[in-house]
Image (tube, rainbow, N blue to C red):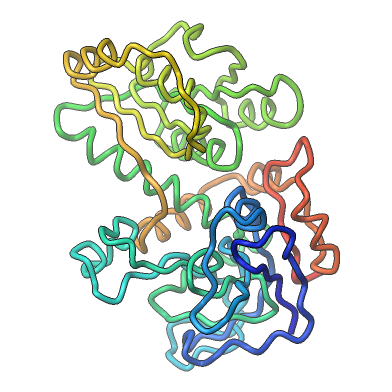
Length: 348
């Protein structure tokens, strides 16, 4: 069968293998036919050789952690043949740490977790894959065209879950949300904010292209100005750019008792002249919270599936910029200026 693979740590090693082995039964009881694979910045960084680990005993890693497939067989009866399904990316470590032991593997404390298409587990960018029942998330049949968005939605579902847990440390009545970055994570974070009935503002550098229209279609307000030029203080910030200047600016911009969730990853290696003492004073005196959030556990995947089922299908479809057949895989992994979400189409 076909599989898109890389040699982790080696640049320009992206390949489409035509005779990749069928998935081993040890991977899981549920056999799935791949329909679509979403591509994100993590894939590009793995292709560039920045990180990634092949499964033990091999030097090749199958890519793809944003999955959508259709069940071919499930002897456990958890799902039925024909059901739409996505595979949870992260698996708990074998020790396990206290969090992994209770199903909170997104909060792994010892770093021994594994991840499909990223760290020591084969990814989903192959014609067929297997998954264990507890890592298989069924989707509403109506999501056949957009269900591939489940993985990035799970990331923001976790972010909102933790925002709300922190918020309820006191009487919490948030009204205004600022999302920085209008990529897939930012737009989906804005979607979940609108589903909560909040006034949503999205900030991004792009002044043209699809992003302003997608934000407007949510009923949110779009900004392409520096954070400091905004004329309001948000109760909640979901920072999705990872840009150091933006990260620092939103920490200073949040309203008293505000919550800043850092969902973007900075590349590091850049020094900024910044008054850390003033930031510390503001955070302490205003009871603000800044926290980081990444990945998701089963609860968040289920919340994400519910959020997608409630969302407008046409809006979700608009997030998918390009659907590229597997045979043209190199084009799928070559970024284009107006890309939001690119999908590798296994069903084409």
